[in-house]
Length: 125
Image 1: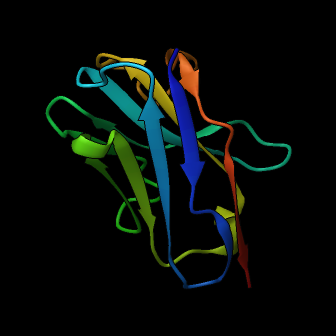
Image 2: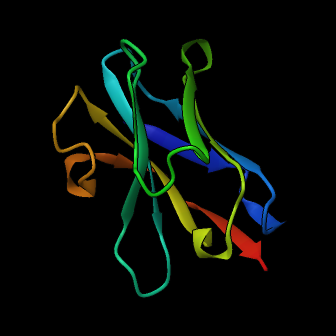
C-alpha cells in the first residue's frame, strides 16, 4: 500500500517562502510520477507541478512557473515543492499525489491513484 505524507505547510506573509515535502512509502517508486495539487475552498483541485522519479523530468503549471519548483530526493523517496514569492491567492490545501508511469494527462488529478492527506498553506496579505 502506497502512503504519502505531506509536511511543511503553515502561515506565511505575502512574499515569503515555504517548502513542502512529500514522503512516500510502501513500494519502489522509481517508475512513478509525483505531483503537487492544491485546492482552495469552493474550487476544484488544481495542478501545480509534477516530477518523474525515473528521469527527473519536471512539469509546472504556467500560473506558478518561476515561483514554484518541484524537486526530488530518490534516496529518501521524498518530493519537494519550493514555493517563493507567495501570494494570498496561493492559500489552499496542498496535496501530494502519485501515479505509476508517465501520462500526458499529468495535470488531471483523476490520473493519480495515490494521495496524501494534504497540508494547509495560508498566505496573509
